[in-house]
Image 1 (cartoon, one colour):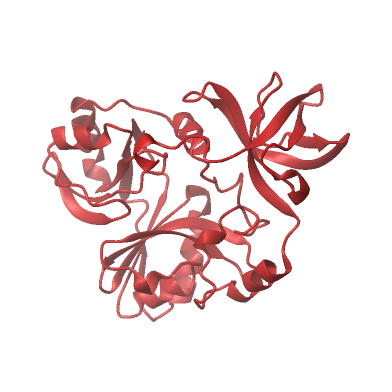
Image 2 (cartoon, one colour):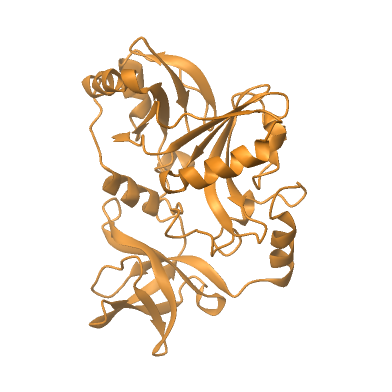
Length: 314
């Protein structure tokens, strides 16, 4: 599948303190990244809630690239720029760069047929060429399958797209991307995570490195120590109906949570969803009901996630 994700933001920092600046703003350990390595991480506020989820790339000894969500581009760009100050250079190049993602089990075959450079290892990035077009190739596979994300100047994007289509790719829209990331149980900003949620309740505590010194670190340490009341879970609909974002989750006749994402899962042939529930309902096998537009309720059960895991990842 070939996805146009050029709406995403591309931010660049360069200079002696570029790595340190990013390290102070995200929950992971950026300073430990070798050149070419990528890291999935979070930028939090002082209260420990999530400003955005990001992929950061160390593209040089003193150079970083940050990919942020489109809806948060202005916020994150201002946040990073303010923190960088005069310590390093900062550039928001989102308007001059396109981002094209080639995803799926045959992605690397299609990439090779398009005359691409050798792709980087998983969660790495490198400068390269596709069909003689200079670009930067990253490999994060955000759909739950293998794949590459290609950063290219706008003026070359159409030619790159055509070359990949001619090599056997099929165009896919953002709706397809949404079902794929849901099957892989990947959080979407504005649905599962936002400035009212923290990484631990969202099941993203693994990206938080409390032995680092980053914005929000102290608040997250307190949250982890004291615990929290709700948890993001995955569920399958056992009753007739499709859960959608915002639908209430009901138990014992009371609203106890809400659906954050839900749709049919084409790969699985089931209706699935994610949602926040009290910890008492978060155990696998727990059941509840989803309120379908206030007209009726449909039964659902908590299941192990990810809903789908590609065979090579088993």
